[in-house]
Image 1: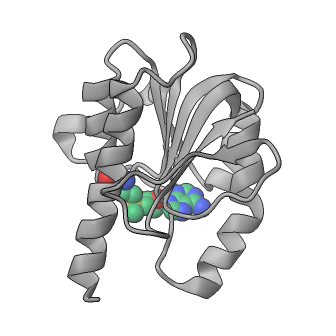
Image 2: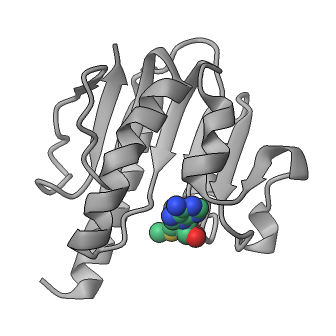
Length: 160
Ligand SMILES: C[S@@+](CC[C@H](N)C(=O)[O-])C[C@H]1O[C@@H](n2cnc3c(N)ncnc32)[C@H](O)[C@@H]1O
């Protein structure tokens, strides 16, 4: 599979899972949305369209979003996510979306040693984690793969 096809597959998976969560009203009534890895801000802008009534907090080691979708300073947390996001543990977020996979198995193997615990800690009971990397955690219950999502491409979980 070409890198282009992998990218397109990942974007379809990401969009369809987020749309599915919104269309089926899967989020708890209260709680922020956390964009873990703001990047260019594409998924952040999609989250803003899907969840206009929620606070959306974005994390990244640098602010690289397109200027049309820049988060306000109060909603952007700069630095290493593993360190900065600990301040959000226990805050009862409704949704955490993490698109921080690298495509390098040895690097992703390190990320998945800390990311599941962090996301589980930031979410409310019944909150949803969406991730390009698998999240192996006793309090994250994997939800069924959508038909449009390729096996192993993107995952979503309910926080028990
Ligand atoms: C694949 S991009 C995210 C793309 C984003 N979903 C979008 O639609 O534009 C991943 C982003 O996460 C950030 N990132 C990855 N790991 C990080 C870490 N450990 N701490 C802080 N930022 C990180 C990178 O700087 C990069 O901007």
